[in-house]
Image 1 (cartoon, rainbow, N blue to C red):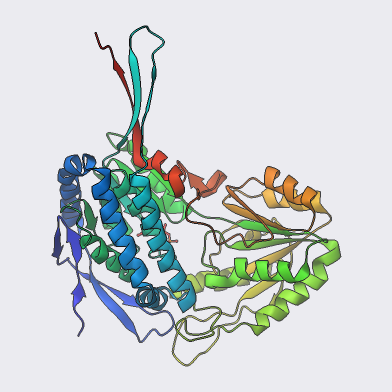
Image 2: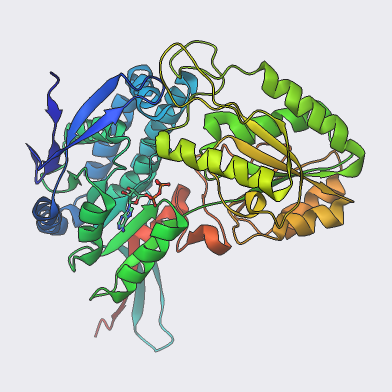
Length: 482
Ligand code: ADP
């Protein structure tokens, strides 16, 4: 019997009302841990604690916030192997990917430790004689954070770190499927010296804990990453709440990678395979549409299939594994459903798509590559969120660009080319928030903005110094010295 890991509310670890089991997708016999689920009343307590802690945290000095964030960063980085193993075990990305994600979370806290010291206002002359005008930024209040399962520590980090940095208090709800990394992060935060109530962890379902955050008038803002469907509900709830809440949404993608005839084939194959299939394709920035011009099409398809054939799909914790399992049975069912849909729509399954058996029972899926797809097919329009990509043939660059932009999403996009002219044109004309040249669509820096356009994102950008747009509110003060 393992201990049930608790929620953190108002500075105390508290039992919940029910338990959520964290199962290893590489080995479904392996129970990673059991986590207490918070109910509505406990979520309300967490909100009340965050509200009570806000005035004092909002007035805390930049030095206090730097010290706390820096301490969190140092502990995360010192424990990255252990935390990376936990992450890989609960989510199914490979061990190097898990350790990389943890390191990123540590770096994000370090970045925002520095940002806490850099928040300076502006002072200017008024248009009226004798008056001063000051523009400063203040924290927003209690921020509710609702996060998905695919980046169990990096996404919480890139929401919690800026929230604390700018003087907000936090109620954090991790995804139920992967509470382990969120819980470990919470423990580290509790040791950082921040006062009780400033940070609260409530594990639980979207419909109970998430909904309570959305309904509560004392939650001033919601930062959400997850599906488009849930994102819409969150937007509606935030607008209908009284007072209205500030909100930011990071949602899906159907990210294109354009491969032109003049691309370096080896680079294009690595970029496509990494972007489409690494982390089991479970990244909102994954390239699931590979738009390839005629002259390189057949060589590219053959080389991608050959590369996929050389990859090892196995237990995320095993050395040398390239692709771990799908996160759970329901996501696996969705991936298989889309593979069937692709075949029914007339696309050709050129590689993979089969369930795989490994030493332990897990959700193993061979990466699937479709060819002869067109951009109107559901596999080219809907986010699958698994190791499934479709190659769409294009006559030339102009047609590839048009296909690339013909989507309701706009998170990331990429192009493989050796032509400066096409690379520059694509950077300027691709309708996405992040554009990559000769690089995978997934895999971004932590110190610059992250976010998209159209149906992918709503509200202020996350990460880098741009994060302050969401986590602060601007005050304009006028003084007449007399
Ligand atoms: P995914 O399954 O891809 O992570 P979801 O949008 O289903 O995407 O979930 C993202 C986060 O949103 C999770 O933490 C989930 O619990 C939460 N969530 C789901 N439904 C709701 C809801 N109705 N209200 C608030 N939060 C929700």
